[in-house]
Image (cartoon, rainbow, N blue to C red; front, side):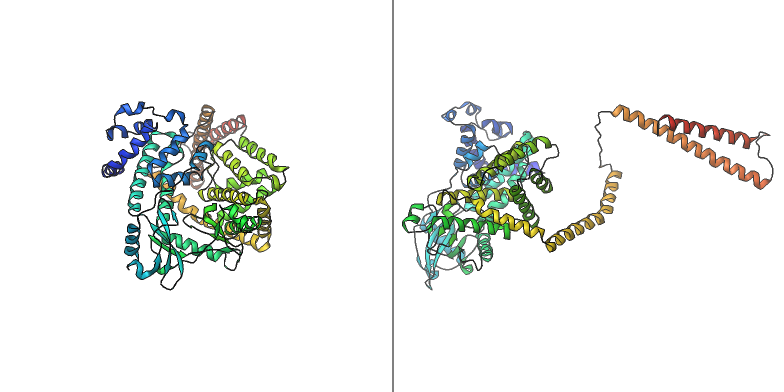
Length: 562
């Protein structure tokens, strides 16, 4: 059924399949198309596989970046999200993926006007008193225009590109198809569960296509910073917001990428760096929801030195458990405790069962020694996180996606603040957060809550045991359970089991004989005459035989030292 569905999908999207295949072949990845069986299906000439062009001057990873850029918005987004996973992909590939750009020419204003009117159900100029035809920013999914509402409020209107959702959904279908085929033909694809990666990517990208999700993200971050004069999150105009149009407060500020302009206007860049770091760490470590793409183009400073966050398409979330794990990891890193770091990784369930624990400990401990003697002023958090991810990649430790997003966000923030103040170190701000987390976990009430939660989970587990046992027995009866044992001393074990079985059979025989003799003795007592069969002294002989068998059993047990 799945195969027929995949074939139907290929027929429906045949033109796009051919585009993707031709770009892959032209850039030296024809072997992949051939291996998964698409070369013949798409009727591509095999002579293309030997084409050289100018790709010999580029590395494999550079060609991967070029392919993603040529394949369009969906694949560029895929590459950008993949660049977060330094624990999964090699450093050389991550370096290339980080260079991906989605700057594209803006859509004509006539198309923007039509989308806004279709979504909001009114003529453009009945809603807006003014609407700039030239966008202030343009990307692969949408573009932003400055406008004014009829009441004079200045707003930023984000408009989705026409037909972009359909194009992305087609590409996502094809990506899932390719992932399934790759898992069948390549061991590495099966190991990394490529279909699961694509499914996670699909969820992230479709959320980004729904502007109401982005609007809710902005509202949530505004609540996080409620009462904080150092952070500004634009207000959302919900009556003019739909899945394809987002209207929010337009706030004028200087983007942090313009350091020279900030200095010329008299801003204190050290104070800006401190506020950016404090804001992101508050979001992350205190509230568990954070802006996950805080690059200089998404941050601006206002005249009162408050920090303006923009573009909430990518927001990270940490569950209560993951927040606990992150806090424990921060504390372990602060204490430079290798064993504590490994305990956290094991509690997360990310360490493969076949890992070489000695080598993992050695590599993590090497990092600890490297940074142990350095003062905070000489430690680069970005470098430390990158090296930790490199260790994870080397040992196939898969960091959870939300924690990987934390790492990438911290690296991005460090790049921002170093651009503002080269002497600033993010750990100056992170250390007090770590100490606060340590105090919070040491509080009696918090500790009692942690114990109570563990007790409840333990009771729930125990209450589920009978049901699981019944399920196992049911599957056993249905022949759905298969048990395999692989032991180096299987022959010795077999001989031992045979001896145990023989001894058990011998014991059962002795028990049966004893029961028979007991019955015979009772019958003798009731008849008040000696028991005998055909004038044979049955009782006396039976007792003698029973004692002899018992002697043999004891001797056998003694010889086996059991």
